[in-house]
Image 1: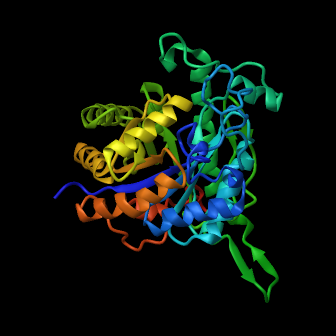
Image 2: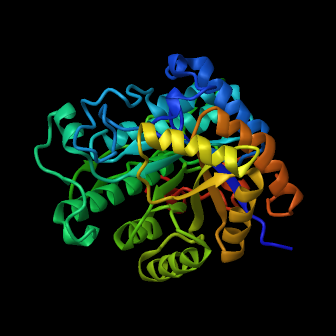
Length: 401
């Protein structure tokens, strides 16, 4: 019996291929409509996918790195705020986790933390976040508060060779820490609601976060009472050593991009070494491998679609791309499961077409193959991942301390 894993999905506009919006079945006129996103998330939930991540960026060009990203006309431009969108989708769903993307360089950490706590309340314990370190030049120009920052990977391709990128990951670490501290700042029983005495809140059970770091400081408690998961699930995407260390120290779950099962083994080993060096969180880091997928009934049909897409707008990605049938995707999932990952995050090349293929063909065949973890009925996203609900760090203190 192969190792059983979770399946998740990554949602981004019309799909992960930049030419997907021009494909039959695409809905380019609806990308910023509530109904479009409600349809997508319900398709993912009906397929019993564990969670959906929602992409975001703070400039028109996103993070593609293309020199003309802000001005070119053949790419989807315009998006909804991912955290707000996730909160909208929460009451329209009942099981699937909701994990919006958030950039750490510009939003105020307090606002980000309270938005994520609100999402966790709205979803009754299914909220998370994918933190993105750093920012692009255009994002900095949009906010107008920072002149300096990363300008892309250095010539070596290594994050550790760029002081600006290293600073961005240190700042992202502080944001992750503040999200956790503010989530803990209310003890679980801080609200007493004693109508007879007129006492709504036990103020001694609400604590100041009192964080002072390199990039910002926080004094005070969250405005949001403690949410169902205690802390939202914190995730990150990592491609190399410094991001691996960031994830090992600060995240509950990391997305990685192995080229095959053999490289997945190497990444898992590097992540274990990183965790041994820096991880203070009690639970092991969960690891999900990314696969970008385009699914048709035959390989020939899939190849034809992929060629058309690439002719229109070539895709550049470090994620493994699987173009073929549902069985081809399941075999890739099987190999990665055997390598030891905890889950797979599928990036549909076309939305909704490949999302529907994942739901209708990939998930049932993976389930028949005995690869998938069954839904155990646990109420929260953390519980479904086997993660305990963290106790408030302040609850260990004496009341009134």
